[in-house]
Length: 323
Image 1 (tube, rainbow, N blue to C red):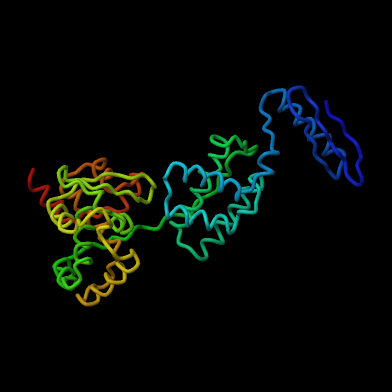
Image 2 (image 1 turned 90 degrees about the horizontal axis):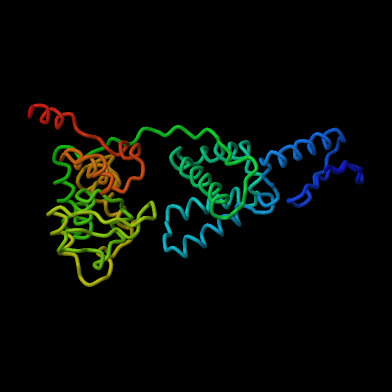
């Protein structure tokens, strides 16, 4: 049953029904208070009422803390995710979960697009949506309006840069005075890994007998084991010296050395991440299936995997001639 009363300069509506705590809200107009109380009574009777008070008390900051506590406990921390969480905290952390409306998130999207590329913004918004879903499913914080659904930025076309002609041999020649860089280039292509994944590999992660390597630190936060080609096996085997890291330098330093080698070799518009593109494309050209390539590359989405795949037309011609 609802009670409507004047309290100072507002009208307060309070709904008291068996089985739930009293629900109270204030309005400027009495008619709004009456309408609201009728809606709440109807929702409670139909069993569709969701108490908004928990989502009004919990901020996004608090939700992220809960999420990180669980991640730390499970040992599944992820650097890329940490960076996105930091960005979400800095802009939206003070908002309660109930305040994260379509309008608020749309404004966040538009402002971020002024400084970040669409792919980055999509990743941040997708992580936020996952956090809000977890609020209900894992932490028992219901969202009366559900997870806000907003239009995501359109993803740009992926880079299509691959090694051409004698670029690979020129690059390796330019890097031959830097064994770490030379081995990294070869392994990045042969294993189709991300820079950060390869940099974190340790001797203890390499199984020469089974020809596999464990990638303990991945973008998805899920470690994976990948097979090694003969070239990769020989290169990694030569680098193993105890259980420590195979590469002694940081990911940033490796990228800097790679840029210098490209300049020395006279190669333009080639990024260190393009080596992963090259490796993935070669796996498809070898005849591996999409599922098999995804198991090696670690892509969780086949759509994203296809963005990284650029099979040369001349290779397709040779395959057609086999028929």
